[in-house]
Length: 129
Image (tube, rainbow, N blue to C red; front, top):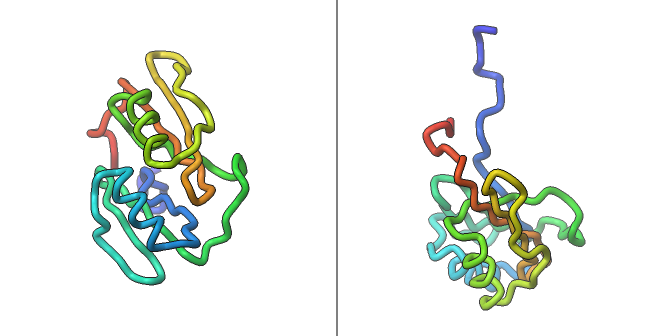
């Protein structure tokens, strides 16, 4: 296969329903420690380590644990999990090792979305394309 232009690349954007957009924008800015780079009434975008976290005010909200869970990389899953709980998230899955030194956890944000955390010593940022 010589033409790879139609093949998927790595993850670029993860969207979260945000029916209360101002509150969600404030919560995610505190949770990730970064201000949005794009802030409009129809969409708020954050650059998280080179990837997009988008808040969409008119997207349907699923009842967790429905749907896909995106896992955001962290250096310490237990500390990140605890920090999100102090910001108003609710525990969904406590930090635990899943093998190979990889630790995962999930919380439910104040808006009903599942937010995954992953501490993965094998993740290679240089492999992102």
